[in-house]
Image (cartoon, rainbow, N blue to C red; front, side, top):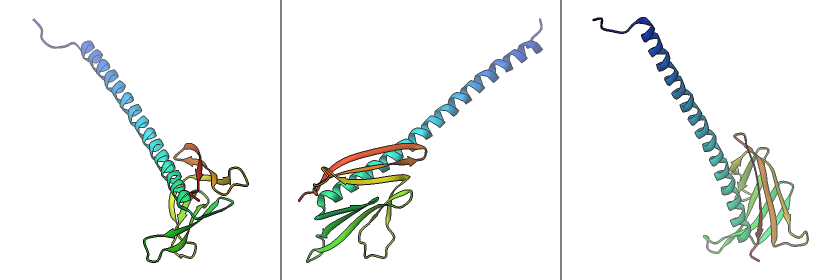
Length: 156
């Protein structure tokens, strides 16, 4: 009695094994690609909601609000000093990012809140109102297109 495999059986076994390994590789590659895409999307939306939340909290605390093309300037009070000191908080679209600067007199560079912001608009709602504002951020980050609009009321 002969023992072992014939050449044809070995070739067929190798072909089936190769197909299985290739299938597992394709499925793994697709899973990794999907994971990376979802991770980038989650990071973009996390940054977006952080920026929007920072704007909302700042506008609510502001004593005064003024706006221009892609810029929002808030008059604030620093209650951590005695006596409290006034300062300006400035949100601005600098090319491709949303930036925040604590004081216009400071020589410090502004903090980048979010990359990829192509448009930042502020408008009172209605136009004669000075306490209710609409803010819209839109742009693209890591090939994720986003738009977020909010309405926020100043406390005074």
